[in-house]
Length: 584
Image (cartoon, rainbow, N blue to C red; front, side):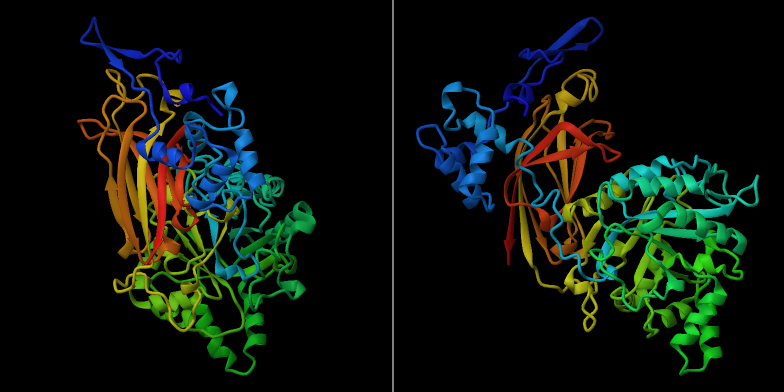
């Protein structure tokens, strides 16, 4: 843990000089006195309350952790924390002074999330009861039109906890017996399928032991499908979860716990095999009529269309999760599908635009559908620069697989990353109970829901920028003027945005501002925080961000680490905040 002086007293050359100079008006220089950060008054008062004559014993620390922070420590675990804190005065080895107490509250041992690395939700329910961390065109390194295809973004996604990987399968342009992965109809370069599969095999269960699902967009002949089957089986071996030909067609999805360490393939079965399955399920109804309806529904749209051919039996063996798609603009087909009562469960895919239109008239039907089936939402085709959409349009209607372009950055990707910091970062987050109740489908647009909790926040200060950035990174003429934007993302009734005032010319800004957020659906609420450096021209420089699931926040005073634009965690930059979750 950094000592207090290094962490809170920034200088230009890291030598802890009391002032910084900046060039001003050609040959002149301006000198800025840098204020030494002091514990906020709230922390001083707390220390005085839980100490005696300026020293805090391990018994008092134990009392503070349990009573004020709301944690559940034994005296032994409090002793472990006590022993890990570096003291500034060697004669206080059996007690903490104010600086040591402040150091603990500001450090990594005092996280904002209650279970930062622990899977704590029930993982024994069907897959349809969880949100899954899902990628779109997972092999692309940049834009959707001309970037390179590579295994590197697949590896990066898996190591960050992504559990659903998408691969577009095409015949090789140079060798018709080979299979490549690239974005069809574009100038993206290809990567070999076997390289992608090997990357998945080697990295699937590093960040999480819970199942990985590979969605194939299949543009192959039956002969090449047979090649895919052999390749997948050879590379994954016992990791592969068996599919249709082994009689494992789901009437209810297994749980993440049951599927631990397994890789599942999800794609649309070739038409003739799908018809035979439907015939077995509906042998008591008019088969021709049902097949006609299904043929109207299960057609791929837009960029992801593919021709259907005779099925390779080996290929059918791969498909653990059926995929179906809707014809563009087929509202009747959507209504039939959502209200179809079969024992079979499947994965439905639709674009973000299709979902936005569908929820206007079929919102409750979609929520009901996702209680047993999987719904995958993918970005519209015009997002050529790998931008993303608001994931809450999917989550609030029960969509499990909200597929995102992981190649870029921005507010919506930060929200996605925030959602999957929940549940130990395992890539699976259980859906709220209100999305799983069949009798009363949830309506996210409702404004009449009662309040459940009030989230109260106090933002004390920020620190660590001087260790992460150069002296002139934000302003060539003075130290930075940081301000912070604080917002709730969630159902429409809960959305609220606030911001602090800018603190001028300080590397360690002290805001001491409070905010209050009433929440009707805290289970879907995320706290988004973004620090900017104020500029008169309105182009406020980026200073860090984070997004946190509200119901995973720990009460009390916490150190909140910030992340860069691309989601990389900063080594030193944190905010000191207080959280209170008050039930109504």
